[in-house]
Image (cartoon, rainbow over all chains, first blue to last red; front, top):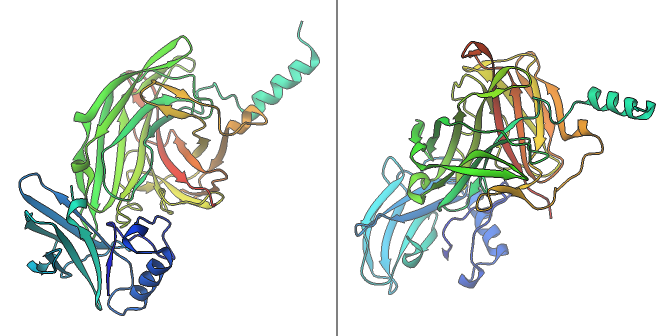
Length: 127
Length: 277
């Protein structure tokens, strides 16, 4: 299941801030269902959080976490084009971060939050 | 001629506490939201005032320390981010009175990582002529970026400090808030605590509190609420209205003298509550 979220999923039964775009096809109902699925997962009992920053030197830095403040070290991440072609693939390091060179083409960053659930941040939302 | 009624009124007012006395001073350290859903540029306003009345305002001669203690999500250590370079003096006006306040525009890159940031402002001591004492309010605003909580409940071992036991940036209107008064990490029993509502909008571009007051006080004594910490420094209160609430523990700091005069080194913590729609 892949869901495009802008860019921080912060919706759950225990949080009050919710940042999402319905125009990307993600309704609140779906988002709550998404969060519930994560909560039911044995691997991730909390909502994944994710953001990336343009370093201004042709690279970007991504950071991940979970809504309990827990580390996202080891969580998979991939950089892919709109066509789906994967440009880079890796894992968040011990600091729950990952750096990559910004592609010239339209791209997106996929945070592989586990059990097939993915959080997507579009390249044009990284600044 | 002073009537019996006015004398009685004065006595009642005095008994309930005058908002213009040395009490009810609050160092307002304000920004639009304590939680940034996603990191962004934002700005602090720093004004020494009576928060409920939006004045009289006191002159801030300077800021000794201004920094954020950050813990990134997934990490244990706290990092100090110095913010002094962003301070700019700001004229703050109320009618014909102008005092010095400060503003600080914080660029996104400074506080962009997910997690909590305990922002601390330690102003230079303010001379309160009415009481011939100095007042220094060591003030904390605890912010969060991205929804990942980290260090919000940890003490910074400040000389005067309020440690929250609820996230100070996530509170419902009407909710219960509990904190602990500390000095260098040790509980302060029986601390005199004042709680006051930020009743006006701090407009940094206008250099003034603007707009209508959000709430009205039936008597002057209602402009701030007084309570005491228990034997372990704990206290609890409700937040009856959405907005920013200042909690001040008076004279709890370890520094008790400044330039040969008594120093009241206070701890201030700001808490934000949201309405339930």
